Each structure stands twice: as structure tokens, then as C-alpha cells.
Length: 95
Image (tube, rainbow, N blue to C red; front, side, top):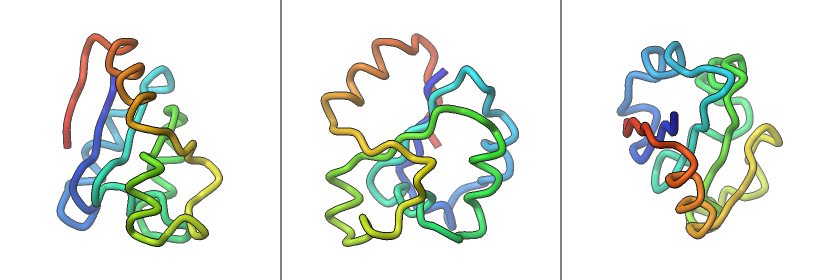
């Protein structure tokens, strides 16, 4: 399953969706959702603990000027790779 986070983690029930993430899931942060990938934020441990594959849209990270503060647990990808993730995951959940 592909989980996408488009809103700031401060506007989302991170506890709920992080408890739903499985090892085989893909998690993608985009738009303001990329804030969840910041090093030392209060939500990061829950996301990493899920062992899901973690991605963030590179263009959104750079647009917010936070590229130097992104956790190494996240893989920065382009919107083209986002399309690949949607094709790979038949089930999707947007947060």
C-alpha cells in the first residue's frame, strides 16, 4: 500500500497512520508533508519504527529550503518516481 502525506504532520493524526504502516508499505511525503522528514522532529521516530519504505518529493523539499535537514531514512525522489510508486501500489491511502 502507498501512503501519501500532503499536509503538515502537525495537521494530521500521525499516530494513527504510523500505526497502520507495514514493512511492505511505501510512505511518500509531498507538499507540506515533507516536514515529517526533518531530522529530530517529534514524528520521525514513529515513521522510522514502522520499517516502511520512506520517500519524499525532492522538488517539495528543495522548495521549502530544508534539503540539508532531511533524515537519511528518507529517499528523495522526483514526481516521475511518484508515478512509479502509484503503479506499484494498487491500494493507496492519502493523509
